[in-house]
Image (tube, protein in one colour):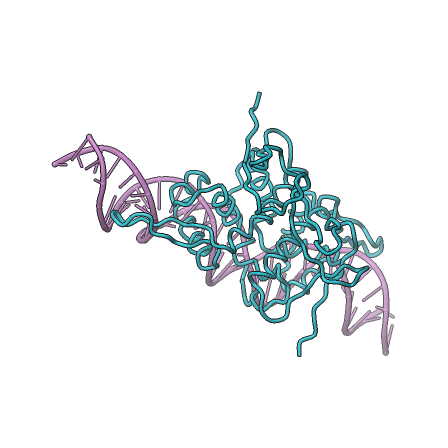
Length: 147
Length: 147
DNA sequence: CAATGTTACTATCAATTTGAAACTAAGTCA
DNA sequence: TGACTTAGTTTCAAATTGATAGTAACATTG
């Protein structure tokens, strides 16, 4: 996709497409949330060509989802850690997972558990204002007047 | 991405990548939730080349997100409407929007309002079991034993 | 100190995908 | 009869993908 000024688009979804809208980027972010940080961990986990991985990591870094951090001076080695923006992307990944669990289920599937209770979580998106689940009440999409 | 057996992958996120991981598909789904159904509506709204739109619509249809429906017999015309799976994808889109609002904000942005109360919604993902917001408690990713 | 290993890449290049522009097909409307 | 509408297809240059191989900088092993 030619990302001509998606950054000017008034739609917050369109604005996120710089890294979203790429399968590898989503999988890298997933792995980052699983605790992976290094080039070779991502490469082996995903079976991704190093050329592509390099580009995706660079893009995710530039987009502020990951941050490069030196973890060894000799030899010089860098790893990729989630930024605040990257960590806050977790709800999106979890909701994707919930959708996939429901509509792409069948066979063995990874489940997410609460580490303290040990129970499988049931992810739902709600509107914090009304408390209603997203999808149960009609919504309206509003573009505020611009000066 | 070469989608060799993502359908066998135990990760529900990976399984959803057939249409996720494509910027146009996400925008088409967004527009579908805005009420668009026709080829030309999508094309004009997105500024997408008809070649690509044709392919994406076919894929989303094949993936069960959209359904073709005849809306005129003479001349024969078809439109694309959301399936249950497509409608249930809304929470993902809303969470992406919430993330984008926070981390890709600035300037005029579309906001989502509750149509009844008229107030802007505050989307959050929670675990229905504990009631806690996703990201506030440690999680564990579990692959259940297979036979 | 030479050989092998580790980690994080880059180079090369064929094959696929993208996307712009023009065109088509089947009909309606004036 | 001629313009218009809707949902596409054709064509093709340019960009992207991804497999394979190679590199750079250092550590470890014998």
